[in-house]
Image (cartoon, rainbow, N blue to C red; front, side, top):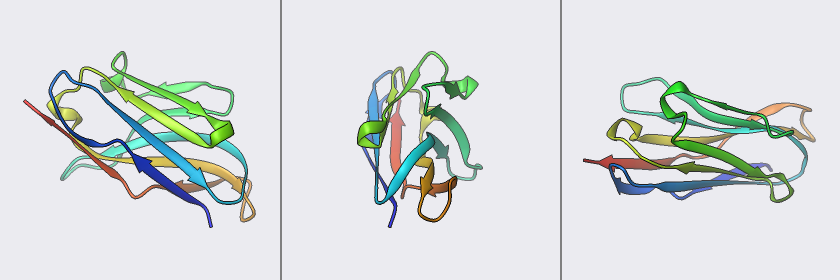
Length: 120
């Protein structure tokens, strides 16, 4: 069974930094792409950053220049380095992965979410 397990969330003051990690486990033949979404209370879930198998990245405009996504696909892990955090970054952050597994060549999986709270 494929699982995504996130870690690294928490409480930080505005201007501070956090690093999120997400590790995939299970029978995985290949990683098509991995990324991070977030959802604030009362808001829709939105893409924060994504990275493909070849290293191409995509960022939400609101986090460009502050957040960096990276991956170690040999370890089936993706990271999100978040710097210069703002109160508006407060949300539950979800790891997402599109994986080639025994079920499908491309299927989306989600982590359980990790809370990031930025205080002023």
